[in-house]
Image 1 (cartoon, chains in turn orange, yellow):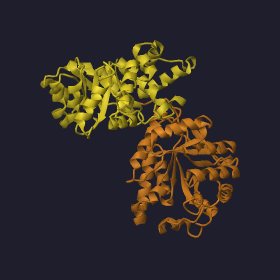
Image 2 (cartoon, rainbow over the protein chains, first blue to last red; image 1 turned 45 degrees about the vertical axis):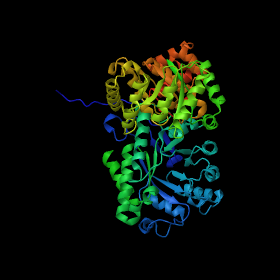
Image 3 (cartoon, helix red, strand yellow; image 1 turned 180 degrees about the vertical axis):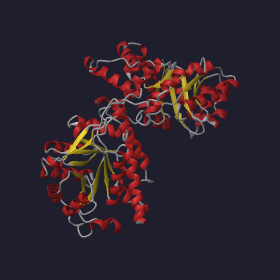
Image 4 (cartoon, each protein chain N blue to C red; image 1 turned 90 degrees about the vertical axis):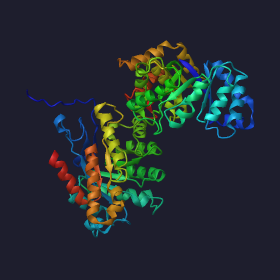
Length: 301
Length: 292
């Protein structure tokens, strides 16, 4: 008797989010099957890979993390261009300078750096604030204004500050990152609240990505469950693409700090795991692990 | 459904202050209010009752009995307080509770026999709360068998599946419905009870009521005999008396997966449908479940 593989049909579909404008525009998500289930349907947009750039010279990077960017780490524009040379689909600029616990640089200054980078590179741009919920309101609002129409991907928006930031993003034509602390119920709650005033096709979920050995299994489970709930069960409050912002998390681990090879393994294994769980964008630090992820994805697609 | 009023709880500051001062008024007001609201039992939750367990428990039981004829559910983990409470009860009390824990099997269950009470037996074991329906079944079969050996008949046993908050473990909330559904096949003749308000623990205060009420109706349909509940919630008591048949019917339809035209329903009824879907595990819970 001929064997016929049992195929699933799914109730839902991940929203297709477009980041960047004009020729830079790039599609994220949009799949109507679970990650890598090519046998059940089409996955038009492969997962996208971003490399990170800091808006101020990094203080705690290892020597081998700095090596690929020798001479340009104080120049975010040159650094961002270098990321694209390494094969990144997009750049993720992290506005570390604005952190009130650090340099506490003014929002205006950070916004002008973002504007320079956005206009200099030929790829979409992700912008992460410092993560300070209060300061990020000011910083991300300024960024949204300064880069009106660029269609950036701005974040993180948390339950404490989603209202003003999402309004600025809506007014100035940007996409947003909804971030919750590794909790699927809180993730849904924030989505529900955002959806009252913000279009679903412009939201990306950041469930928080922990490193291997430091809680990665939580990130894996939540990413996987988000896909199950959105795609298999068709819950339209859970159908946004997912960003796995893992480079910094991995770099912080004891193992990554010890030596270069371990650092590469830590980031790559975490990245591959979250990719399998369903991440649509990976934010990486190491060009070498970007190369590996690209090979992994292309080998499958 | 038999309702056990939950308001006299040592965790409540009013109650613990009243106990410290031996001030009967707060306790008696709560007992009277719950009696008037339609409670069938008054739960007396003493917690661990570490200080003067005998004297405190007797004082509380007598204070409550001074204003109500309802039977008392003596709710403590302390066997000394329990025995003192059971002794002081005029009406046949409910021993709340025994469980599959070793200390409970050795010290609590024999009290139910000695004082000829009804007894709540929960599925808890020495390892904590069983994680799934099979392990709950295993635990309860074993503890009830032991109770039977001690001479406690199934009819006097009120099985408690242990309800967890929907905000913490949505899957177990749905599984408890299934557990209640199969209980009569497992242990013919046993009764059942739940700590109903636990389902909404962790949920914003103003939203707790609808979770409690909807879950009560759902559990009732699956055969639940009683619940320790907030009887001061008027809508909960009304639902239990069958005064809101439309809501009950709508919850049943939701449980049966019937198509429901949400746009034709008033807000309140839509909320019941959404809540039932969450409690069945059909939609993912979030604190904003009524808003989408």
